[in-house]
Length: 398
Image (cartoon, rainbow, N blue to C red; front, side, top):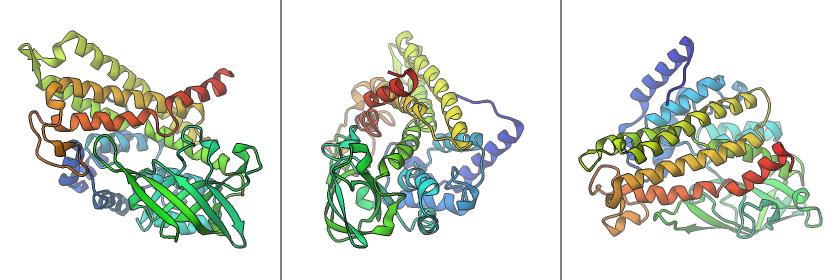
């Protein structure tokens, strides 16, 4: 899938490609291409390389460290980085918290936290979901009670991605238990090294432990760590979620995964001919390619609107639904293409951190774990069923 660009935009794309050739370490791109596990050091290394070039926070305003790119330039970079198999940037500080601080935080908070996100001093994670509050986030029960110059936080968060590495967590907490659900929530920044914070890993079906439970027991949080106004956190949470859902669409990553799928279909044979020539398989490929092209166009429209000061609304829910469905369709078809070779031939292939040699065709060993891992996409960030409710309410008026 290719988009058409102006000569200036084509020149920028050439610059990005050259940068990726020169600066993206081969050992990192090989890991991403093969679907292997990235360490914290791997992710931090790519973060630092982009920051040194000034391209890390490419959606931030220039006054806070952004490069001043246009919407199209950001789309070009995301697409080329994904096609080059660059590591995915951890979004929690860069793409979730930062927009909230820029729009709703105090100037002191912006001056303190934004530079630390850029230089990698602080690794952030997200404290939204709870055991009884996932897609129904407004029912969260983690409490924060004001005690002088501190809030005392008690409760539990779950599905906290990469929380085992985090220095800080941005949390939704209930500060007024007597108010309506959405009106009694605040947005707090919590130091993960605070006494009373405990992180427990959750091992997923693919053998990885990328998500965690986080427990808070009488954790004292300075009042100045409140973002915006007390009991207005739901407003900030919704604003953040629109950016998370747009990011989940993952146009560039899906395009790169589709390119790999098409290459797989061309190299594998069934009945003496390439799999890509099988009419049913070819039809499935074509359906994904059409959906991917349409999503890329829609994504540009949504990001363009955001660049002019608007926050994505129901459109981000549309992108979240379609983006996750496309990525799941790609991994399902990749697994189907490999057939029995998609099964892990060694038990260790479904254990945390396994990066062993492949058995059978290249990429076959990671087809099943990747497929299993991608099942989560239609659930996190607000399940696709919830997104359909948002669309029906905001656009159709139901």
